[in-house]
Image 1 (cartoon, rainbow, N blue to C red):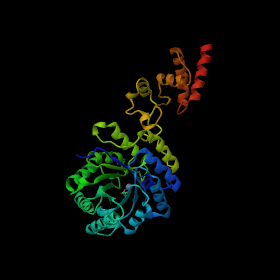
Image 2: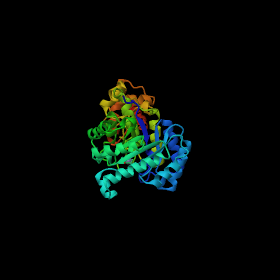
Image 3: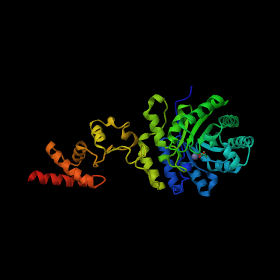
Image 4: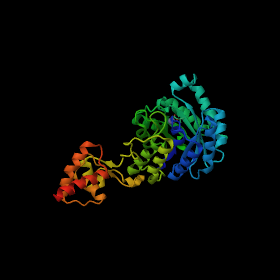
Length: 388
Ligand code: KIV
Ligand code: ZN
């Protein structure tokens, strides 16, 4: 029987920070790492230590301050990368080296000009070497999404024998369909000797908008770690969004899969990452976008004002948003206008509301949104009319 705990592996500071314009300095990374630890992530991928002296220092400093999470450093299947990562991680309470190599035919041919056998040899060598520094070694089979399942199973079996504790199955190019990615995880669970002794990990990219769906399909089929980033930032179209997978598992308890995330910190963490990286979040982004809990059409607003559950599948407070927003536009109805007017002190009779609504529609047809200042103006007009 598999455990029902899904480990959350956050790679905001590694795959997320690779995005042009998202670069952070060490002090900014330390603030985010501390927040991720508080949020309850299980693993923080702090960087790629051999990539630059700055990244080495960041991983090393993060290792010193993180109290609960495992701190992980990325490497290629290259001895010096692994040695440098081990050095950067030496202060971590729970260090992990994340090493790996491309396994798809296109990576083997075009990136390495090599053969499948030689790639297996390098994978074994990298894991064994990493194991001489730390107990916890994660292996990634880059481009596993496009790797032939039989060969992928062989690679997995060999790196387990070499001591890997976690097997990362990245859909590096964001190509897989959810059924296909889930079937890949299932295939590995059924065909790799020793798989019951390691954690299978999903690492999905969002090139076709399926990173979240693929990760969920992965855990439903037996993976027990999801690699993700805050706000889904990452290479190209991004990585799996942490807030999305966490809330999907929380809102679907029948899946019987849990994470250790304190969901009430999600919204603030999203803002922290958005601001320090200067990477805006689209308004319609699930969970943390400005419109995620905003209602603007009359039919929806009327329903939500009567009972939130009519159009909301989760309580905004669960993710740290104080309340749902009723946004006034030309599509809003009387109920929404009365609701917003009451919030700023106007208790309207039916006759007043009818008059205010007529005036409201005139205003609303001229602008995108009616704000509190406009409501005051509308009420002034209504008062003048009622005094005549
Ligand atoms: O997308 C990917 O394959 C990666 C690996 C380096 C883990 O980010
Ligand atoms: Zn990636």
